[in-house]
Amino acid sequence: MLLPVQVLNHHPIALALLLLITRFALALTLLRAGLAKLGDPHRFRDAVTSYALLPALAVRPVAATVTATELGCGTLLITGILPAPAAIITAILLTIFAAAMALNLAAGRRIDCGCAGADHAQPISWALITRNLALAALAVVVAIVPVDGLAILTGPHPRATMSVAPEIAWASLLTVLTGSVGWQLTVRGHRVTASARKLTNSSSSGR
Image: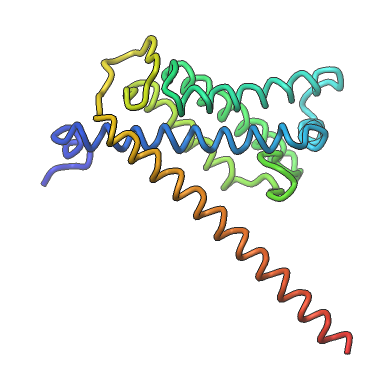
């Protein structure tokens, strides 16, 4: 019986496709987070302040740097411009996020992670730290074995670049985009349903 890694080694196209989808998923995650921070910079600065790890003078430039880095790396990953360096920076950023959350949890503090906008407020947790470290690990894999699908400028990379046909690359991007949109619609649908139920219950109890 072949192990999963051996199967992928025997099917380089499957491995390339998997890495390409991972690259796109990382890009969309970064872009979504960066756009949310850009749309509400004051709230993100408050979130950075609540971590209590930086002097007051450093909060504004750090918040702006994080937002710019997420948007920049997300754009580079989705367009294939220097994907390996962008993936390495992404891994470092996610690891820093995880460390900041761990320090606050160890101190017994449960604060908003500041990961996204006001509509997606989420307290820090060990599960969130695990998610960030898992994404960081995926980013490292993307950096080590970059895929040239939809790549404009691959740039330097530690190992040989894998190749996929352009139509496969576009199909992968479409799959990730469709899945992301579908997930967001599902989440928002559940929230609308929950809000409607609360209003119904409130009106019923008020009678």
